Image 1 (cartoon, rainbow, N blue to C red):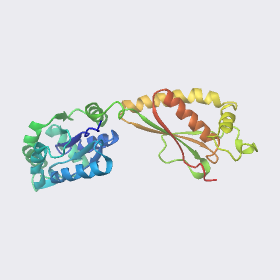
Image 2: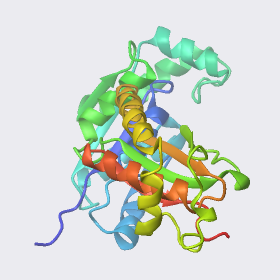
Image 3: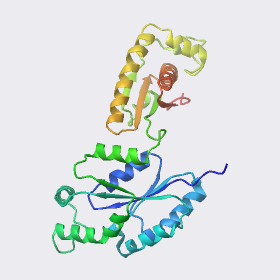
Image 4: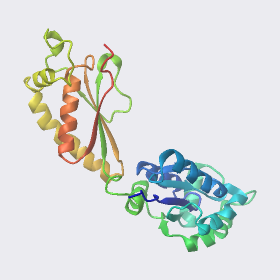
Length: 288
């Protein structure tokens, strides 16, 4: 069967209502996201994504009053259905009081404020957006939502079982090359005997069975795995509650060739057995 066109989500709404947060969450959910796009270019973006990524790639575009006169064409583009994709219009709003507070905290003028007050800009924006607000497929009032609650709402509306799973990357590294700057957790395997000093293992690496077996059978290895995995699972559940969908676990040894590689593979395998979308990487393997 031919693949069906994926969803096109048009994100719009009031300035300060959370469009950037929604766009970031949609990107985390696997959408190809374009921010501040003139509505007249929506069809061009869809065509380019179709050509380069295929029609199964979901797309999200953020359009708002910053687009000026181009904004008037959004309704026409949407109703014409010219993209060939099922289209959802997501509208974000909030009370004037909250929008004023957020805008003042950001210390940025409203795009329609001109020489008047911030409230005047908000009122003009509401007038411009009134028709879109009435036609929106999904409306989210962010007045009483924090960032995490908003991302949860976006995930509920547009996420799939696959895209809302926590994605865990377990990476090995060598301390002599530096700790990975993107690591959420760092564990040091230098408490285990080094296979480098075993002549028949020196030329091998942690993905080779003799080295992996040697490392996992050393005193303390099994105890470390039994106690460290529950820590990672506890953190993973907390990440999901807080709306984070990516976790990086760095496992280090001296050179990133033997102990860290073997333990990275084992930790990744055990996390996969527990249902986590987990990949193993080896940053420094092959550098020696």
